[in-house]
Length: 344
View 1 (spheres, rainbow, N blue to C red):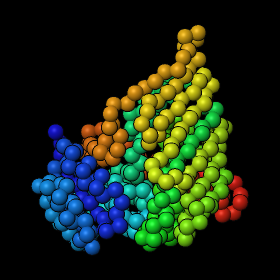
View 2: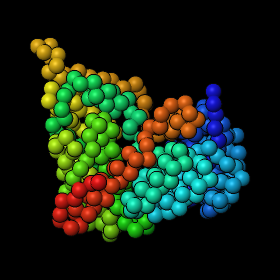
View 3: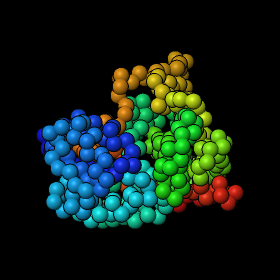
């Protein structure tokens, strides 16, 4: 088995660190982990989770890159701080796994994708729902030809309003457009926009959108977004993206096609359901039951590590990450101007 060293570049505000540390611990292809955090705040958690796998800690990103020379660097920073850190890792010849959205302007990420490609390095945005078994099965079915042309897509991803009511949340980068790039759409809606293209093979060419702060909280990012999109095959899709609940998630993806439909549970437990008239008189609703606890970040991190070890294809390319970021920033531009936007 080929094993690689992995660096983590983060700070006290890094997202999903617990999940990343656990994933690196459980991934056999990770030989050692080194961590850089200027604040030092994440060191105790990393040591507790990773144990002997954590070989060194640094309070300087440059020192980690210079002294440890990891094959892969996980960058988990607020969006405004991420591009320089990603650039430094790429300059050092490291593959990069980046917490989304990893930028506050699509142009900044585009430059990083260009650099990664020129150096033949992976740049992978952390859109972990791609690896979920129902998503992969839906992708396989849609590309098998049994559904024909995609006619329409309806999606919603709704989380809790409760987090927005905490004064400490108002001080975080998630509640700041300058630090995070946006609100619910760029933090959670991004997953569903990515999956729409990943499963169907379609590309968003045009969007219109509205955003709002419907909960009345003192934040300058949206807690609600409604998006309409046109894909390159002429079909249309919609996305409702918002913080509305007291707790938990309500999620849904439904895809209607020439010869049937598919419905995914999204973040909620449940089977993939689908129906295809290709079966003729025997057509009926079919179900794909995923194995228990098959989702989460660990499978996606493992896939990213294995890609960097040359053992499989990357779970996402830099260009795919850039595509969904361009779509989101086009949505924000549409909401701001009131005009439909093309996605190049």
